[in-house]
Structures are given as structure tokens and as C-alpha cells.
Length: 143
Length: 228
Image 1 (cartoon, chains in turn orange, blue):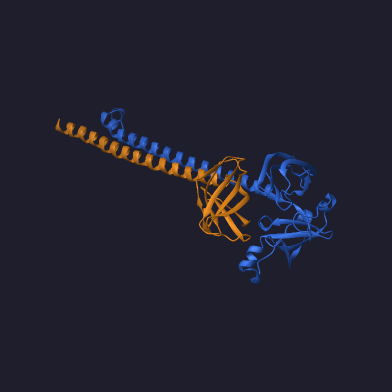
Image 2: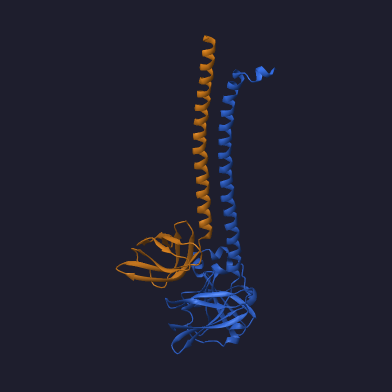
């Protein structure tokens, strides 16, 4: 009788141990694989969006006022995804932009920035517009 | 092993943990396979997007427009000839920071006149933008200054030999250093930066090149487009 009970207890204990280890392993694996797949999917989606983002600076207006220079760049989105414009650089110096601008597909907007330095009239500058996804368009401007 | 031994309760109990273990292994295996499937699908999407993008870049670089900007009763009119074998859609016409948007389709190997409501401000200040993101500017006669010397269409469209020189955009002046020559239909210029051309002045001034043919027609273009 005692032998029979210990055998049942041993079997039950084995079941409990195997089940708990298995369930723990399963839960951990589920979390790991779900996170990995989600992260890889997100990276891939970002890469695809970065590839598909297309924009160009088609016109630039440089104006001076109060010891500073204001730059307005006409940005044309010729892609199929919305472009979020985030930064602007003039000869490598970051301009203060008023707000992040979103350009819909086929849209044209003026992206404005300013720098507290007066740029001499007629000088050639490199204007660089950077999107939120890191794409860059650089153009030459006669101020 | 007898039938009695096979069907004994002891042998049935011993198999239970194996079944549970196998079931859990299958679940984990399914998860792993699903993750790999999701990843390969994402990678396939990325490769497809890269292929589409490279095809688009080829099309974009093939785009070419021969333009003439005219003063039509004070308003800007554009004669655009498309010498390429593909359709080009002009989406914007610019005149001195003013823009008119629309869709002007220029079929392959054909010419279209675009009438705008923009004030005519000279050829240098006018340009058009295409749906593929290219910006094309106009033509001008050498030596007659900005806005002067409008050419006949035959002069502009002539597919002759073109000479390429550095052009100082701010001074409206041609430098003596010649880059080389090419032909209208294959205006592709390659060059390397020499030691003397690495100074700031040359770097800035080298932003534009000027092309002109034997009849004095000139064409200005951004180097970035040409060397890309």
C-alpha cells in the first residue's frame, strides 16, 4: 500500500515538475519570439519607409531681419508616403525650425528656419533638409 | 512484453510526462517557426521596396526636358520638349519664388506649351518640377546677361555638340576651365576633383556647370544632378 502511494506521489510530482518547467519555458519562449518578431518587423517597416520616402527642395528664399537670417525652403514630396521634416542645416549649422512639418504625398510646403547670424547677400550656401526618418536633401542656395 | 504489461496503469502513467513535454516542445517550435516566417516576410518586403526604389531612380535619372520660358503678355509660358522615350509629368512651374501647381503631361518625343498665370520674371528665375522630383531650368544666350536674348526653339532643340565649363552662379560668369564636351542626347559629364579645385571657392563655384553649343545656345544645370 505504502509502495503504491509513493508511486502515485512520485508520478504526480513528476507531472507537476514537467508541467511547470514546460509552461515556464513556453511562456519565456513566447515572450522572446514575439518580441523578436515584432522588433524585426518594426525595423523592416522603418527601413521600407525610409526607402520609399522621396522629397526635394525645389525653391529657397533667404531673407535677413534683425541681425538674423531666415530661410524658407519649398519642399516637394514626390513619393507615396508622408514625409515629416525635422531639421534644416545651412553650411552645417543647424537652423531653429518653428515646427515639425508633414508633407503629404504630392504636396508642397514651405519649411521655415532661422539662424541668429546675418549671411552676406549673394553668398553661396549649402542648405540641407533632414526628415524624421533620416533622409537628407541638400541644395545650393544663393543668399 | 505481454498484453497485460502494455495495458497496465503503470506504463500509461509513465507516458504522460513525455506527452506533455512533446506538446510543449511543439508549441515552442511553432512559435520559433512563426517568428522566422514573420522575419523572412519583412525581409522580402524590404527587398521588394529596394527593387522598386532602384527602378524609380533609373527612371528619374532618365528624365530630361528641353525648356524655353517665354514672356506671353507679361505672363510666363513654357515650351517643353521631351526628348526621352517616356512620359514626363510637370507638376509645378516656378517664377521667382511663385509657383503654379498642376499636371501637365508631356508625352514621349513630343512638345507641349504650358501657359501659366505667373508673372514673367526672366528665364533664370523660372523652372519646372516634374512628378519624379527633377527640377529643370531654362536656357539663355551666352553673353547677353540674365533674362536677355531669347532663343528660337530650333536653336535650343539643336542636338549638336555641347561644351561644358564651370559657371559662377553668383557672378553669372563662365570660368575658362573647361570640363569637357558632350552631346545633347547623352549629356553625361564625369570629372574628378583636382588638387587646385578643392579650395572653398572652387567647391562653391563648382555647383553649376554651363553647356553651350557652336551656335551660342547655353544650358545651365546643377552638377549634383549630372554627377549622380
